[in-house]
Length: 331
Ligand code: TXA
Ligand code: MG
Image (cartoon, rainbow, N blue to C red):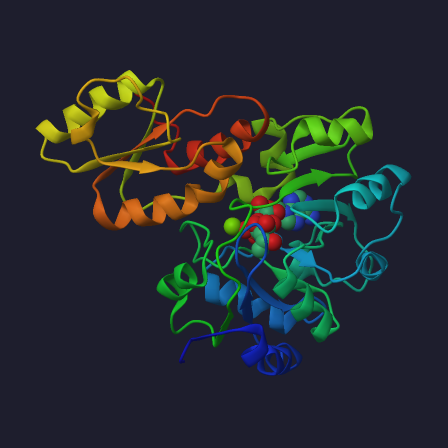
């Protein structure tokens, strides 16, 4: 199969007919690129699992192009859930709701809930709207690989496995959507993201924060190793220990790279000789650039030494991905 990258203008008609024929299409969103198929067609959804090599007990998110589509996917939507939807959609959030009967088990991995997301990205919205059906989509990477934040990342990973990638440039948010389970007694964050626990608490009064054990039970995806670069990756507890680790790797003839915010290595001696990838000045920029930095680093280096972004706000969301990528290894 040939894989082509096309702009929305060049590729929209083809994308729509692929979806109508039960095929898959890769499309950009503000978080990461998604591998989409008609969420109401179980055969089409099976093709996603095939292309990705993903275990089928891991449910998919259904993407919509208008708030009114939620009622095609979900039932008994609470007032609280509607408040979250109103505040944050379209945007980088997925809301877990009680599923309606027309959502196939292939999408939800037989759960009685469904994840619904209304992306903000213009190309995603126009594509989904033109299809006229909710689009089930995981991130457009083969299972366990890093999520793609450019069309070129997708091509590198999925060439020959998908017919069409819609071009949408670099994803603005850069990590996957926040997932909040609105069917739990206390709304529970299953995956942190750009919509933070603080932002959700503002709307809901009370949310249960991300907690390893609960997430394993409710978001089965969390039990698989995710977001892993092909080289070694460690988190440094301080800039000093990052530099120390760099030198240790160098002695062992491993070409390492430090990744962190612009000022990470300021004031540390001898840093001019160190390979460094600059993630930008703010946590939002670091979040936008983290996967691209991991993509770049794994091509050139034997070890990634990464800054610790702390436990609060966007930093906690970035750390969630970095801890998975590094397998929790710290220096
Ligand atoms: O930003 C995103 O959410 C991207 C873009 C493409 O929209 N999509 C994405 O999908 O990250 P994926 O499949 O890589 O991650 C979806 C996560 C998985 O961990 C899955 O277990 C969880 O969502 N999930 C889906 N439906 C669920 C449900 N009904 N209950 C609990 N967790 C669910
Ligand atoms: Mg994924």
